[in-house]
Image (cartoon, rainbow, N blue to C red; front, side, top):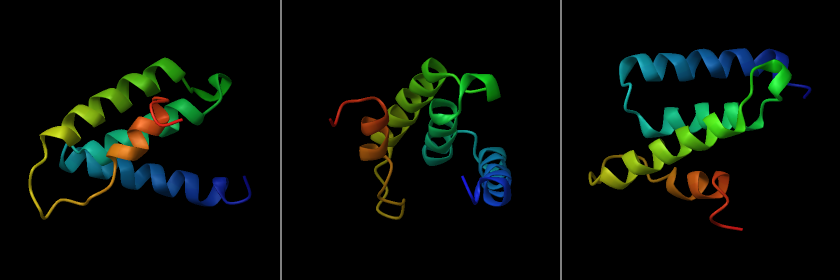
Length: 85
């Protein structure tokens, strides 16, 4: 909460930039899913939309086969979807 005002806007700008460069970037989609899921409804959050984005991100991650891609995202998406409790 302390850093939200300063870094929340900055991180959102970087996420938007990442999605502009590659709309199918599963990690940028995951970050958007996390934002939607964790943001209170009165500030634009939506748990169902967050879950849909996490599902989409997970599907895109499963298609990645390149060894040069970052190796994070699958577990995080599964946790958001409640599959790793």
